[in-house]
Picture 1 (cartoon, helix red, strand yellow):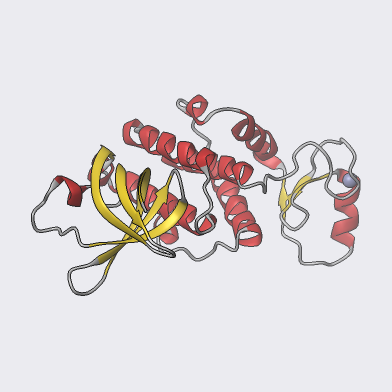
Picture 2: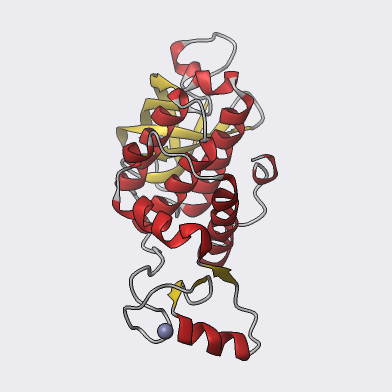
Length: 248
Ligand SMILES: [Zn+2]
């Protein structure tokens, strides 16, 4: 069956005999691997659309359980990201993180829109790249249905102020429950609700990515939130030890 879809190139995997596999995040089919015989040599329009950081349109031949890219064209290339080391590393991290978060062949149109929006903003942003990445990740949690509970204590269920954030319980914990948790020596990962991290999480959840255009988290809040987001992703998405992680 011949079909086409917009997609973002997550990764290019070279294979033998002049064919390669491209990992695409497609709008219509979700995350898919597609083989192709389109070569690098000609530097044709099609081959340019096979590079990571490309948002393109892909003509696919869909077999029973495989895809082949017959033709491709660039809609937007975020190649400018490659001219700045910090942006490149963070962009690579977001590609890898999202690749791990997505299930195979499950369309995720909201995540797709979020990702193109992220790259549009990354391209023009000149500072606080880390804040943009964190906002993207928190919104991704929401779209994947694993948004932390930020309104009610995850232990007693009451609407109380957050004293801490518990990874294992999946959200905020009130003062009373925190004391109980601390007395029982379980190994749950708990973060102090200092630096306003719960409010930052709330803000990222409800506002569009565009709204953080001029927002930059302070160094210590950013670092704490980064640790929290990574632990959360490790716990709920089994995402850890990414190749690009150590660089950002
Ligand atoms: Zn409680």
